[in-house]
Image (cartoon, rainbow, N blue to C red; front, top):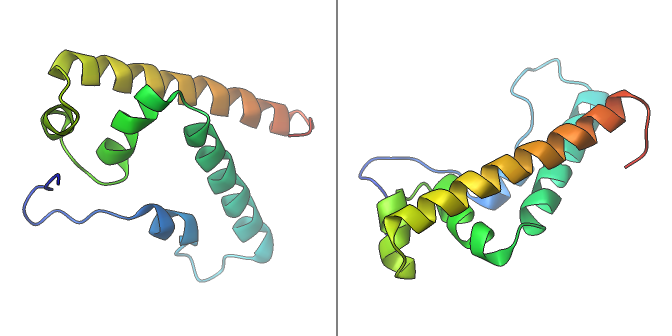
Length: 108
């Protein structure tokens, strides 16, 4: 079992999915866009290759360090770093392209 840094608070995947805007004036359209964005992010993460997803999820969703993930998976630290880097850049490119299509009026 991996451990988190003492005193750190981390959101679970469900908490992130259920998050709503903190502004009291948020309207239904804002909530719809937030939910749609969250769906796109979840889909993009799910579509990552398994070797990238297995390092990205504990790092970003659970708050573990790269060293802890490396130790838990039995991988060299450099491998975890490179997989994380590749995953983040892949997500960035996919989500940026998707959101640009949406802004241009394209369908998802």
